[in-house]
Amino acid sequence: MKEYTDEILQSTKYVVDNSAHVHILEENISRFCEENPIRRKETDWLQNNPFPINNLDEKEKIHLMLTFNSLSFSYWGDPSWRVTHDNKAYNRGSWSLIAALMRAREEGIEILSPTIQANMPRKELEHVLRGNIEIPILGERLAILNQVGTVVSRDYNNDFRNMISGADYDATGLLSKIIKSFPLFEDTAIYNGKKICFYKRAQALVQSISSLEEEPLENADRLTALADYKLPVPLRDSKILSYSDELARIIDNKQLISKGSGYEVEIRANTIWAVEGIKDYLCDKGIKLNRKEINDYLWITADKHNAAHHRTRTTAY
Image (tube, rainbow, N blue to C red):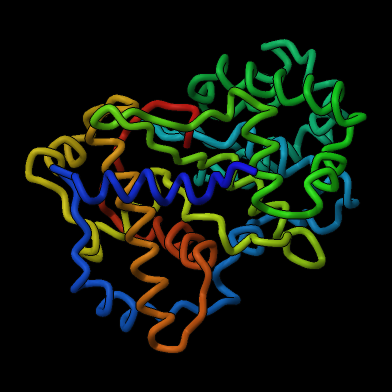
């Protein structure tokens, strides 16, 4: 079986070794780890979400994670998209999305049903995701949701758990099935003529499923860090990631960076390997945290940093 996690690490390592605008300052990893004691109980993003999703039944929880990860990308903007539910405003895009999905359920919309998703019209998804502004690239989100609903209803008897069991509850096997089954989860780039793989949303979905299971999926620790626009912020603020003056100026001025550009690919690849460096340093100190736990810690704490994030409008993250 093709091992996508190995492909991610190998291809992104090539970028790290050849980066022109982003570099990892390994000498600052130790200081970061000493100043930021990462405790396991603080590292699961699902446990930090503001909604009681554990009150849902098993199928609903799994389909909530499928729907969430199908739609979870590119929330940023001026102003950024946010949702108000039960008189509370959610300013972080991920929480706003979960709020919107939970609100839809309460309104009697079967937003978690693959058969409903397969045929959902734009107007209905626009209603489900209504907020202070229209969520960015709504049309792309609709296309992904339609595709996911079609595949799960047609090939897996309307139950995503059948794909999970078909992968023998193995994280790498499930990742492979997701990448092959949902073409709109594609997340690769070309750098110096070489194919670079990230698969951020596909890995995020597998990680979410693993977190919901009584026992984590087999080989879940093989999944890599998730290359998004949040993680580089604390890594840059901690001086683990160093940007060229040119790239720093673009990001700080909130200028757009093209998807697949050298800038973007280097940021994402070096983010993955910065997490590898943190993991290896902690392991040498006898602290065994996996990539997801470090990833989630960085993601949860990202909003405490004032630094700008890079702006690439994409369905990848």
